[in-house]
Image 1 (cartoon, helix red, strand yellow):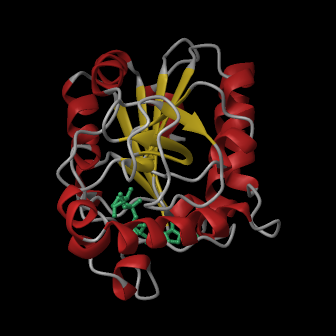
Image 2: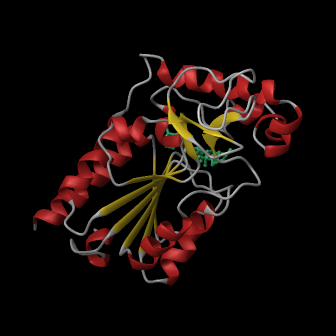
Image 3: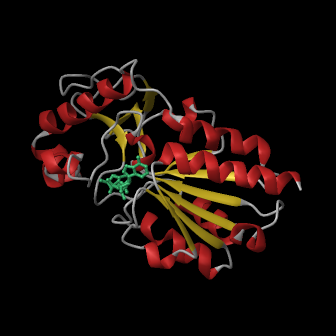
Length: 245
Ligand code: APR
């Protein structure tokens, strides 16, 4: 097995996930034919300019996504659960970096988790930065509980043109990991799409797990293709066997 030749149980692992891992839980991806960006224009709903010019449209878009995430039918799947379990199995430690704004990784048991594109379940004030937890709708008429300004509340998500979160911590982990795994992401959006090269430049072994080859597939040393609920648990089982030997 190639993996076994390249890593040892003391190697730290960094895992990057994208919308593909939540697809089988019932949440749409962004760029597949039935994806979110086939129905909405990015510039209308996912930029600071859109929020400044048409806040109702932006808030409505995210209110709908938050409601979908809260649907009792939407549950973590076998891939989320396998990654949650991996934290307790792998001696070298696991950092999970997700581009997803849903809460399925945390509900799947992952604790060492960075939401680099933010979290739908949090609300932030654009004026004072106050962060609150809650899954109800955000409306333009709402008043910030901290600075008392009206109309400044927004989802705690990273829009196009904004800086992803915790990049220093992610950069440090990519520089020190022995294995970098990318799961369910098309490789269209930077800086996440550049993580594979960053990790590889520092000597990590790199693996892509996806339904099909991503844009950056050739940058990975190994690729495994199929639905996340099948290939992720199988990959974690392999790591578990490696950790036990
Ligand atoms: N199992 C594994 N992979 C899957 C599955 C599945 N069941 N279904 C789809 N995929 C793959 C697709 O083949 C595609 O390569 O998941 C990938 C999803 O890609 P995108 O829709 O582009 O999502 P993502 O890469 O997460 O997007 C990155 O773009 O719009 C922004 O901020 C948004 O975080 C998002 C970022």
